[in-house]
Image (cartoon, rainbow, N blue to C red):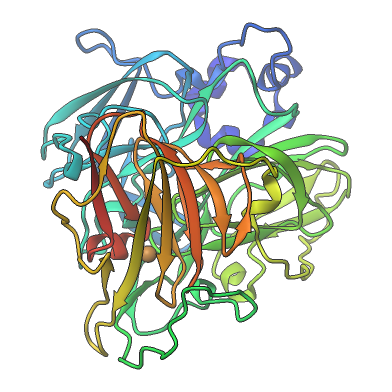
Length: 494
Ligand SMILES: [Cu+2]
């Protein structure tokens, strides 16, 4: 297979076959450049260019599509350029990038560049004043690619009770910004987006979102809320990228390889965990940002909006299932087969993994933080919807919008303390900024830079944010239903 064939086949094939099947020159170019000048990545041209005005670097076409998750499991959704995930958008840090978005649907759309430092008018959030991509129209997003790391892009449309809009659809994709300083050497690079499909409203509590009884729960009220809970979004089908476990091509690996896995939770509603029996993940970056203390873990927990970059040393030949430890999730599709060379005759093996708590602070360092200029407390509460209604969400006692309540002074250093007074965990996200994790349920840390953080049920997290990106800045829970029903706030610069 030569490089042109590879590009014609597209990105999904690259993921499915991995560099191990490609000719050596190509495989080498996927590995990290050891010279100071980075090589242009061979996958950079997959989605572009197009010939319209000054040629756009990438074009995304928003349109209805069918998606075959497995034989006889076909669903209809809306995707980018007829692929789920959408095309990999790969760029160099500092590059001026133009993305042409063509909207072939009947509704306005927004493409959000998650984790990038871009102006409010380009960020892809209606609340910040980004213009929509009109129905049956087009819009060009132009920005300077920064900061380097694993970013992603997705629809930021409100869905409310329409579970076929926004992040419930297939409108998501990886966006990689390469720099000269990559966090680790590897032989093969794979992109794994965790997803769930066919969402429905249900009164059932999602057990993975509930409090772990061993957690300290510093925000648990003395008297429990006994009002009946409302409906939450649940989903019966799961996939990694566009296939349910066993339905797609395996990840093909060789003994001794170091495989860099870019994990993304692109779900609208669920926190997921993944493990690979007999192997460990060396976590090197969270939300695309290198961590001060990379650590080996058996299980990765990843919430909607988050990314985890991890290197796995392939040193246990066999055929394994990389998947969610909960049996129900794996049998509903959350997994992918990892196949060593010359082992194809074996059946994929799953082994129960020891349950270990996911703890962001183990990736941090003990260094102290400079004192903040101001502390901002944000209190999250649920208004239970009762048996037939939707739960609503309050930030400091109010649903969105808040009048000029949250104001940054440019250059200011803010400590933001998230008080989660609800019985669900919430992945909260700041647009257009990074923040540093300072404390999680009383445990201090430093140096872990993120754009989305899980605030555990009845838990507390503190982050430091330097207000260095002037413009309207949206804050919200990355669970679409929570965001749509009140869980968001707009920060302004004074
Ligand atoms: Cu939430």
